[in-house]
Image 1 (spheres, one colour):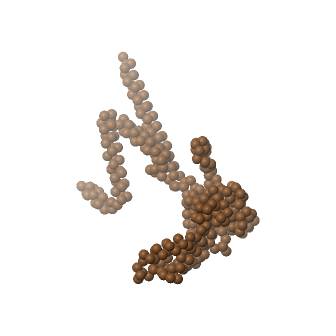
Image 2 (cartoon, helix red, strand yellow):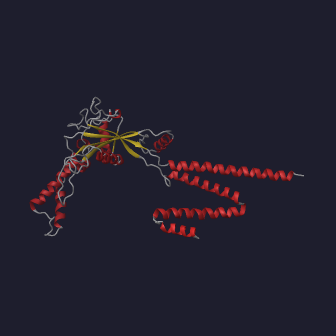
Image 3 (cartoon, helix red, strand yellow):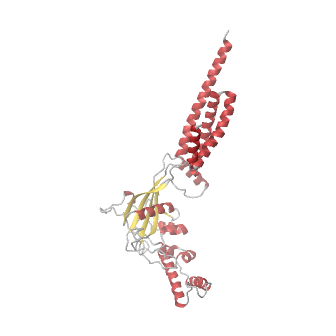
Length: 378
């Protein structure tokens, strides 16, 4: 009786939070569901045979469940794929004789991040806005290289007209015109600082034409859109903020940066088009590769000009500081072990399932041998 009271007291002292409650629920459910099946089988076939049948069924079910985990990426999961920073280079990564800050060899054919004053110049990158002005059609130029002061003024007037006369946010006269001019200047900055990665996202035909004309020489690298390189940009930005480069420090004025372009090299081959044959052949080729080719991405950033935020206004757009060097962040794709736990559980459970089946088969052979031996006795 004393031991029972002690056990009850120990249970009462447990804090039944979500973890403990969940663990007890799983254990109790497993004991009831599996135990009831084992009990029914054992009462019909005997303790040993019933236990062996129940164990075989458990391992068979676990193997099938783990196989589904591995196929669909659910259930027990391992480390997810991530981008890992391999190196940081400040300045032109294509210059190999920089003894103070030598770039990794893979960056030798990366374009010089210095922007060209004119299109077609060597050893520099064309500005995206210049490509739009030369190659873009009227709709593209209107979207990416225009400042509609009239539309801005109408929007500002509509907003401030809806405010009450005593509202401190309401602007009139010269203050209203200054607000219109500020918004127009911000739009001009966005147009001038348009990156090639952003341009490829909205007008890929323009960047392809620039490559065909030799204005954009990428070597073995592929220009990525900002959306496609979003995960790599996030990883590079987090690393730069934590690195000792002056970013993210609240006591410094120039502590932010602007993401420029992103380049990709390696990985499995991409589809050239959406044709049926290309989709089928690409799927077959990529599925039969024994190993994944290493996938690299380079994210380039540049420090921005510090602007004092104004109370009551949206933060001003980040403007690139042309006097600051470009920082290239080299990242490598770590594929992780996302499906490995499910695969290991499936293999382990499958082996145990086969062992239990072998034990059942051996037992059946032994029972048959004994029965045949009894029948042959005089």
